[in-house]
Image 1 (cartoon, helix red, strand yellow):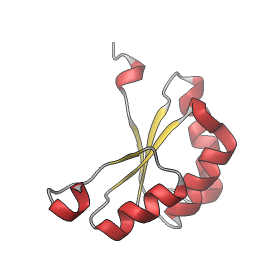
Image 2: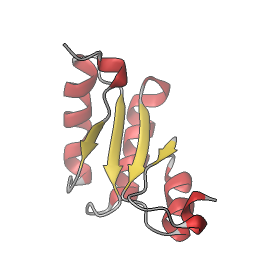
Image 3: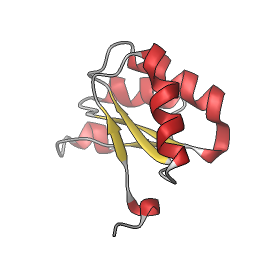
Amino acid sequence: MAINSQVIAILRGIHPEDVNQHIRCLLDNDISQVEITTNSPDWQSSIQGAVKHFGPGLNIGAGTVVNSRKVDESIAAGARFILTPNLNPQVIA
């Protein structure tokens, strides 16, 4: 059995209008770490809305972050962590 605090749910391709319902289901099952990928439609709005709706009980981050511009956009949207699929020094910095 997995320990839920070590699970990061990845919401890829999700639309902003569906985010809260999915995150509510995750939180109801003790999963509070959620990544929304930057290749999802209007991903910044999804992160912003989740932060506003769920507050500090949700550890939300941005995934598939491939350049420094997306790092800046992720932080501005309220992401608390960044996941990148590569070792681009500009993204890591």
